[in-house]
Length: 158
Image 1 (cartoon, rainbow, N blue to C red):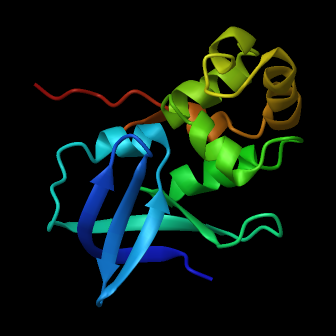
Image 2: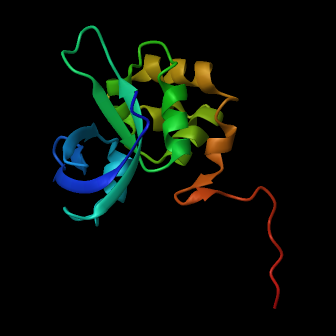
C-alpha cells in the first residue's frame, strides 16, 4: 500500500483535479480534493511535493486510485467520511470542495444546508453524514488551514 509520496510535481490538471508526482523516475497520478488542489495553486511543475495518500482499489475499476492530501489529519477526516453509507472514496474526494474544518463544523452543527453545497451530496446523503459522523469530528471542527486551534485562548504579553 502507498501511504505517502515525496517527489517532484511533474504535471497539474486543474480540470481533473489530478497531479502527477515523479518519485525516483516513476510518475504517480494522484486525485486531489478541491481544497487540496487550491492549496497547491502556487506550486509549480518541477518543485518538490509531499502528499499523504489514501490508496483505493475497487473491483469495478481497472486500476488503483491514489487520493492525495497535504496533511495526515485531512486523510484521517476523509477516512471517516467514507464510512458513511453510499459515500465511496471517489465520491468523497470530489465532495471535499470546502475546508475540512468547515465540513466538520457543519456536521457537528447539523448544518445540512452547508453539506448540500458539497459536490454530489444531496439532502439524504447530507443527513446520513450527520447521523454517522456527528460527535466524531469535533477535533476537525477546531482546525484552521494550518492546523489545530488551541481550545483555550492564549494570554498576550505586552
